[in-house]
Length: 203
Image (cartoon, rainbow, N blue to C red):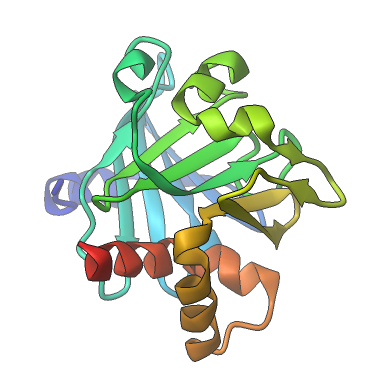
């Protein structure tokens, strides 16, 4: 797992240049750092990127009580190597979604976490459908989702959609109830931790 300690000197020299409801952006010479505070109850995401090309260099997914593997960033140059992922669940953000428009987060059966974006600096939508084949049979819109047999869809609010394998869905719902999750935004913040825990118990 990548360690945050070597990058703390970068954070100390950052200048805050913008604050939104979900994103806090900071800039340092030759670096852009994005802290996603949408996960502020149970963790946060820090992305380090060279400001020249904006490509992510380090992604830290830090969640309460969970030791995660490194985030695997999927791009146009490497996506062919990730077209056979055993996907358990994925978050799909519409182009105008709050949080990360066009962002896609994937968890596989082994608990590996993948990230890409079909709008900005990631992959094309056609390439995304090769990585996540079930998307070809999904209809995801502003007012709802339709997914094929064997999958369940959960609306997480503000243009963010979670699609999860039906085999995991009952336990996913149970764990959400155990955490007293009542609002979509709370599930948006915590779905990753729930699914990762399910992957641990099944393997």
